[in-house]
Image: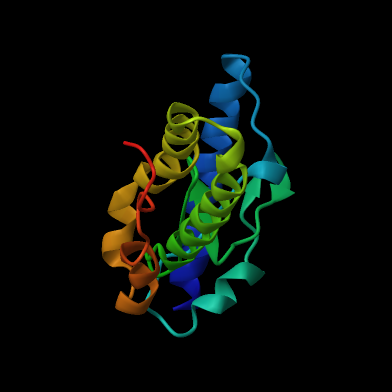
Length: 152
């Protein structure tokens, strides 16, 4: 078991070395501090992987419980639960702010603000919602898109 992990770390480091060499050849730089890594596994002893040194340009890359790619966060179990929770919280906050300034705007202004702030947030990467527990996705499905009395 330990030798399999060790061999895997060696192969990962070789791949990262090749990527770093390619980057130097093409004058592309990589930021090891901004590099994210997550171990996707069902094994109970997966936590022990962080003790192994995965390196990019000589700097250690720590394993994280979740990573964000293009604004979509997923965790080691390939679920998007934390992403959906954040979307629901942000959408509720933006809706509250929109409602707070609605009296200052005409119908078209409120509609534009709502569509640009709330709808765009809810519509970005909706595939993430499908893998969430029912109680988490309920925070999104219970979200009333356009409050009554608001213009289309």
